[in-house]
Amino acid sequence: MIERDLSCEEVLRHLAEYLDRELTPGERAQVEEHLRTCERCAREHRFERAVVDEMRAKLREVEMPGDLVARIRRTLALES
Amino acid sequence: MTDTDEVHPGHAPSLAPMTGTPAADRCTDAEFEQLLGEGVEPAYRLALRLTGNRQDAEDLVQDTALRAYRFRSSFARGSSFRSWFYRILLNGFYTSWRRRRNEASMDELEDAHDLYLYLRSSEAGMLGPDSTPLADTLSRMTTDQVASALDALPDEFRTACTLYFMEDLSYQEIAESLGVPVGTVRSRLHRGRRMLQKRLWKLACELGIVGAAHEEVKR
Image 1 (cartoon, each protein chain N blue to C red):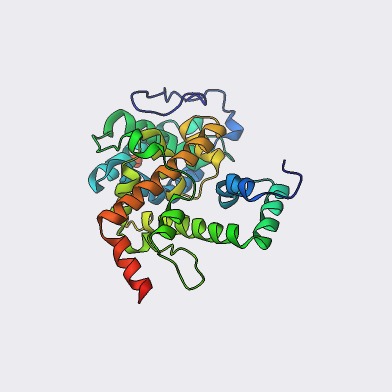
Image 2: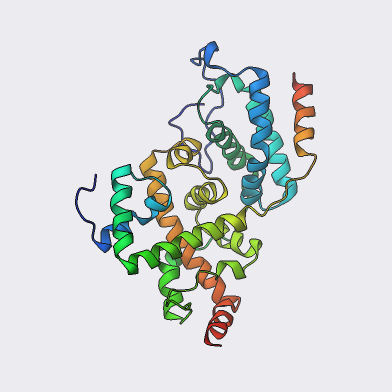
């Protein structure tokens, strides 16, 4: 548990876990407090957030074959 | 299927049902089919990233669904269906579908550091009005180009990162899918994301995206 004001280096070390919502509520609050007061770290956070969001958006641009679920159901029906 | 067997190339842990799942904790067939129906689309996206082509992705998902159905008694109601299903999918992928890939060497990727894209964008003068580096390098790439960068990572990092980016899974769910501790997931994502940023920057330079974006900022 992080118990004092964070340095920029500490925020950077925890940035990925902060983005991924993997910090405890207390840790999260400390990172957010630092981001409120440190413009440099806030810029880095916004950039990393945008990169993750863009990666997700790009990689999820996939259209599943419309009949795949139906085909699977038919296969399972035969199995049972 | 044991919880301690890691999913990785060359090793396909047994999918024998966990006879310890009490009957009261098992899904009914109707519940299972609902979970399966909801899970097909995200599984297809994952399978497509892993196999690299639509036909193999369809085959992998169908095979996974069949295995999951046969071993549905090993799934405990209330636990993460996605983690359980993805674990079966990954086992199947490494057993039957793993393809030869142009995997970048660890030397090429290993020295990537934190904030790689941010720092490179700053150095290249790709700054927005508030002097923030432009984060739109990726938006100028196609899905296939972005996917190729992910595809170039060494297997253990690629799988963890693929699960991370494709699905909004927690570290715990990724760990369950891979059969590894949460700490291992944290480490692989940390290193994998740094490698990925380095790969993306290299790709952006090769595609001429960096130069084009810089010219637009200057105007």
